[in-house]
Length: 114
Image (cartoon, rainbow, N blue to C red; front, side, top):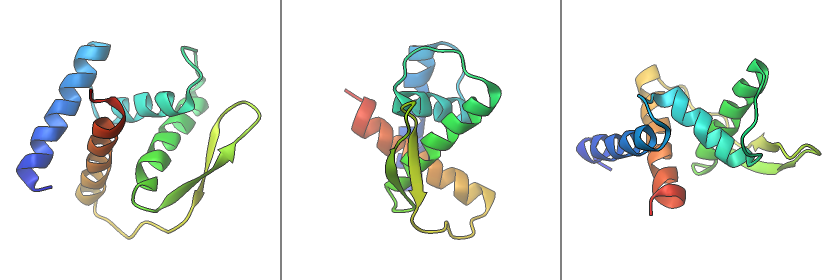
């Protein structure tokens, strides 16, 4: 995708999440919602450390598309666990954000967009 396509697609993702969940969304909020979706446990209150784990689930799921992680399985409570397949190359913060946004756009187009 070229830069303009990424921006247009990212705006579409933001609009979807903002309309669906109300209020302004940011990258962390979208990661959290993707993690909740992947966890699949439904509505529930989570502790602070669980919220961080949920965001980690999202990152692993998103980066598995690029071959960095692979789903290893689920624990007895239904939480997915990922295996690191390949170390991420050193990226500048802007490059990291671009990679994650691209992965979120792909996730949205594959699993959410109707």
